[in-house]
Length: 297
Image (cartoon, rainbow, N blue to C red):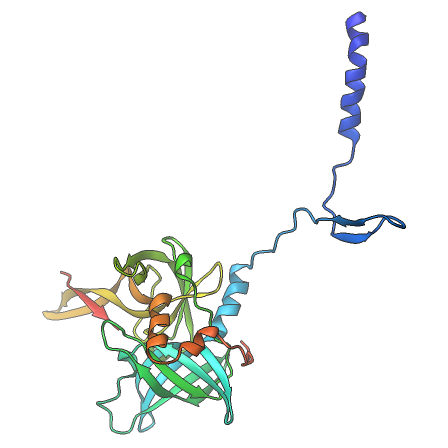
């Protein structure tokens, strides 16, 4: 009896605690408690910015990308991909700048080439005349900058070097084989660092791409920022015989899609006199939405 009686206060205290309501997060309140009293400020607890879903992030990434085509006599001679990296208002109107590969816009072997940037919107496509305004030397700086008057797309934001990590989830936006924009997913499979500058020199991803994807963007799925520009991919040549005839085809090697990191894009723009584009002016509007290894581009 004595032990039971002595335990009642503790029992009642436990029951009271169990019945007490759980405190709920409160919004920030600013006010006064009365005349002469100090303002009352209550900080919001547990408020976090919701992370975008994969679908939402992809919708933000898509409008930065264009399809490129070099035409001659009304036919496409070469195709590639590109990413809008900046735009500005001029007396003649809006001008956008597209980053792509230097090897993708080589036209010396063509008599009357015409370079166009193409924006695909569901069943419709719009072409914009493009001009090459800067090129790097292949293979060390396989980048080119195009000037596209009237192209109404917002520029992509370049990721910082510190945001580039092995294993990061990425999406590659490109136009392989000259067709409409295509997506592939993967991760950063390798980062090659320059020992002198301490900057990333080359990036690899295991995301699958195809011919014509050169110049496409590799974007972070977490931030939506541009991590790198696709330069090419390594393939394995597979051969076989059928009815005494030999056939062969190239198979892209997983993890061997290589690209120019954002640090190289910055360096290229600075060297070519376009450092002003690094501010990412957003004056444009979004219109909608046996084996042998070889390097393929």
